[in-house]
Image (cartoon, rainbow, N blue to C red):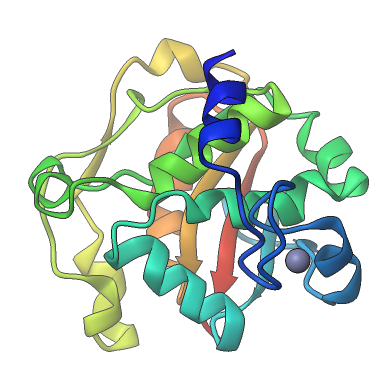
Length: 212
Ligand SMILES: [Zn+2]
């Protein structure tokens, strides 16, 4: 109800073509763009699949930067449109039990005002009707920003900064672990290992962009 009212007062505009009233990505732009979430099987990791929309460049990079740093949290809806307009990916994701966002340390979240990954993951859970848990995977220690480090420093940087709480929620659950960008995979590696050790069954990683 409130959502409908907001749509009337503030009609959504397609970020791509400027068309009013449908969504942040209209159907004709979706049909024209060749961006789609793709599923890649992964072996020898604690997760089984990596899903991403595209490489971290051009359109995706521009939108992600706005989403992360310019207080434009609504851009999560733009990225989600690619997902919910795609029946195959929705059917695949609907088989999972819970969505968990890669957390941000509380001090950093306070400084930025929001964790873009949480916003995206929470809205994804709403659209797919899959459960959402943000109190099982906790970042208890602030570390350096991964993107500022050399690849070989990144694994060490994410060691001992996450922990699990309420592990009963994870027992035998199939999990979608969500992050914004996949670079070396060090972060999601550490997180998915922790989730596995705490009883999670299958884990897949869903990110918006892959850096290379
Ligand atoms: Zn459009």
